[in-house]
Structures are given as structure tokens and as C-alpha cells.
Amino acid sequence: MVPSWLSLLASDSTGFSRDVCAILLIANITRCFFWLGNHFEFALLLQSILMILAQLALLYICIHYRPRLSPENLGISTRPLSFWQWGTYSQYIEFLAGYILCLAILFLIFSRFSLFVSLLGFAALGLESTLPIPQLISNYKQRSLYGFRASTLIGWVGGDSFKTVYFFLQNSPLQFKVCAIFQLSIDFCKYIMISIAQLLRVLSPPGIIIQRFYYGTPPPAATFPEEDDIEQALALAEE
Image (tube, rainbow, N blue to C red; front, side):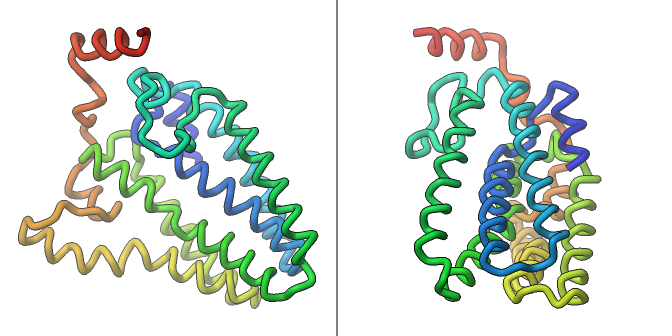
């Protein structure tokens, strides 16, 4: 988290996937509703609230310092309804407000069913366990880890390890344990299998740990486009 703040405050959001904010915001909002149906440790609820506030601030900074040739600035998003690639911060807030409203309605209707509460927990924790995936895709497309600090990777692995141990020691709900193990193992199990293909030069390394050693941290080619390309892109954006 801290390395991401430092990178963005340096007026550079290159290398940071904004989808990470989407995953953490949606997952932690859902986890708050899960707490209403299953009162797990208050410390975990407080963590979710603080994470929501931190991600809202991080998202604002990320939008403020987004690259000039980003899909939002050029209007070339290929996502349905330009999801999470909107032009203004208020559009993100409107989506999150609508999501909270929908969850509140569903919770009022189905909260008396334990199955619904359990599914809510698995949805929240399962979504959070996919956190590395947007960064993997971003690194793979850039073929570089420019803007992605080694300290961030170390923080993720260390944090996931600590969470897993904490959930078992505190006897947290099953959802926390299962998803923590999945999130911790996703950076290792799949990477070992793909590293075999990497040795044969069949595939480029998709894992963040392997990417770190394979790509290094040089600026991606898209970071420093030719001046003519910039002028052409800006001209298209103005039309």
C-alpha cells in the first residue's frame, strides 16, 4: 500500500493497475455486510473500513496522475460500459453507492438465511483473493515491472502470510481461512508450473515473482511514446 502511495505521489501511476482498487473496494464493502450477518472479529471489520477509506483516496490520486494516453483520456476503452475506466472520480463514487444500495436491499431480504450470509462471505473473501491478477495482467502487457516496487511484492507476500496465520489462530470463519490460503498460494503453485514453460521459452512469465526477475524494472515501451504518436493521439481525442 505505502509503495503505491509513494509512486502515485511522485506523479507517476504507470505500472499500477487501478483494478486493484476496484477489487479491494468491492471486496471490503461486501465484507462489511458479511459482518452484519456473521459477527467475526471487530478488528477485521475495522480493517475493512480503513481499507475502503484508503482505497478511495488512492483511487483519487491515481485518476489525478493517470497517463495522458490512458483509455479514459482517449475515449478508447474496450470494456462494457467502460467499466472502471471512467473519466471522473464522481462516476466511481456513483457506482460504489449503487453497489452498496443493491447489497443493502439483498441483505434486508435474505439476511435470515445462513446460506446467503455464507455466500456473501465467500464472495467478499474470494474476490479479495484475486487481488494479484490485475497486476499480473498489467505487468504482462507492459512486459515490465516499471512502477511496481519490490517492496510492494514483499509486502503482499508478508501480509498474506500474516493474515493466514492470524485467521487460524483466531479461529476466524471458514471463508477467511480458505481464501487466505488461496491468495497466499496463487503466487507460488501456478508459477512453478509455468516456470517450466519459461525455461523452454514457450511462455512469458505471468507470475509477479517470476516477472520481477525476468522483466526487471525498465520503463515499458508505451511509457515513452514517440512525439508524433502523442500528437496524433491527442488530435484524435480532440475530434
